[in-house]
Image (cartoon, rainbow, N blue to C red; front, side, top):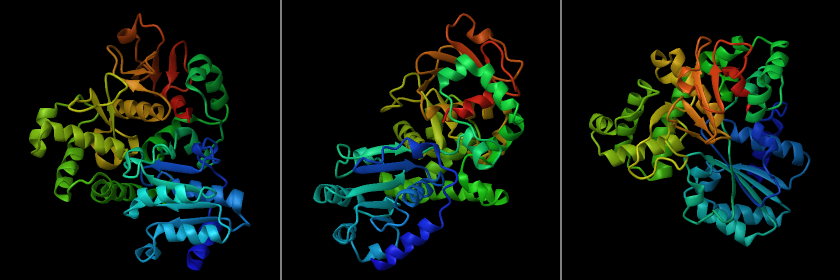
Length: 397
């Protein structure tokens, strides 16, 4: 226990809190049980360490522990919580809960047995907290942490700082916002960098090894996280890797589920299930005709990789301009908005706004006559009428 306290203090002291992710100010930290979900490498650990440093810097009433510590090979989480609470602890921060086999049941027991103790834990996005074995859905308040937005990328690299902009403000006041930004920076220069390596914060460690680390992160997700979180037999992981390879070299595309099932030697239903797993792991995105998701035996209309960095890492040859544009738009809006496959255009947002994605020569032909229709244009510093620079949609979170 004392060793864990020492490690906790060391991690907190070493944490830089000059730059905070968008989610930091959106979490209601007064809740008794908080889950922060997200894929590997998006910054969940840093976020909670920043909160501890800012609010419990000189106190010992908060404790940070990673559940992959060897301490838990011979000690239970409940024992730790009991000892911590009896020595004055008030908030227990737990990282990597998926590394602890009975995390769901024991967190429920701690929540019920220690009503004055608050719990904050991080988990992988693929972990279905609300379907946990102990039914945490009535107790936990869950938040999802995305990778860096383009706006955050500009801030963390010291280029400029700007508050997030609501979609409605982008649509109505984009000219004023564009003028403000363009007076300070050349957005297209930095936009190209972001598309290639700006989504995961670990690019700050070394850009040269970024794609190698990203590939390792994806492999860990497939080979370690998927089997443990979804009870998938390891023999099927090869098929999922094969499926991801096929997707990466084809996206964005309208899938033929029967052909995909033939390629990886499995059933149609299993392919759809694998696609849902990859989506939950934040490796791909699925675009459907309605906002209810894929559902049982329902194929998505289009498949995308989850962000442009994954595209450049897995299949740079498919990272043509059109694919990158659509992937970026989907990725930046899915955090706060519902995107569905429209009858005309590329995306229907919140069942209200129709968007066509393209370059500066894109016309309104495909969405002519549609109310609330817009073109998100690449290679554009300033927009006009309903034509909005694509990079500006990176300021939504």
